[in-house]
Image (cartoon, rainbow, N blue to C red; front, top):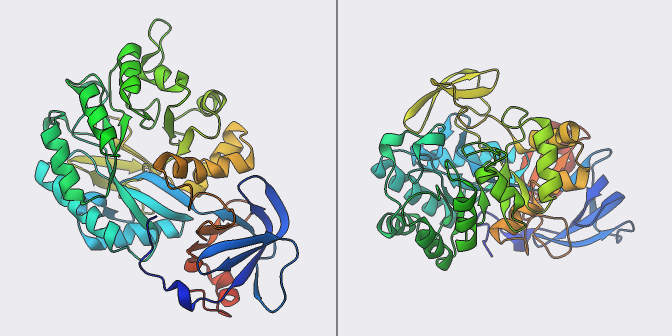
Length: 407
């Protein structure tokens, strides 16, 4: 289990969080108390023990902390900056939006820049930043095809080879968790099997693969689709394409950007009907412009223009987003009529299961890590905890948490 290096669990006294609603693993419980002790969730009850401090949330709600498994940057910082300062900025920014863990995600760039970015993520994985934890590295780049390249500069694409994969694995020092690739590339099935043998998750994206090519890749061990429908061949009545294949495969996991731009509300509802809440995971795909004003930014080797919060390349292709996960959860509820608990779990439990960390993260359950977020009824984040310690809190709640050793 990945440890959080910035917290001394032994010094923290047990305490209850009393919330109007607690989004547990199985249901939404009303007027409940959650006991936090030694960084873990120890009890979920309506009758707290005496002589233990209670943090009163009033009308606020307690949710599992979110996991953003596909994010490039925020607030002027980019994973491709390859600096500890960039990781720290992204980490603290994500904590303000209820995220307790993320995969630092690369984008197509020079080979030198790419290896430097993975080296930096690997170091952050071992020496965690002060906000959301680095859960590992996600390679989105290099191994794609031109037809659905999106915001990836094709002149830097590389052969999909064991040599290149091994170099990335080495640079990341054990942090590499996901590799995205186009399954129509030569030797893709062999590389998919190779990645799987290393415990690395192969995902399919930025691809013009047809239905059969995608099915072959899934049969070889690929686990699903990168930001489904975006950066891939869509559904045609004579070729369901990559999108159709990952939606029809019962075991395939699909990433969803629920910003109201990348996917029509009707498509969100369709994905939900086909995949259910367990194989549909929210991502932000946020870039350096997240939390910033409209303007011109860079994503990898390309210039992107952000207008009304929507990022596009000069050719008009969408270039990531400026989305946050609490907004994505709210969008699923309001745009696609997805039940509250399932929408929350698409940003927490579903990605935790996908990444293989659901024994300790992803839901509010006894003996799981106390990695939590507090929101109001509009899903505005008021506080975020990692292992029972506050890593973000609004001024409104600061005094409530000042009564104990919660920082």
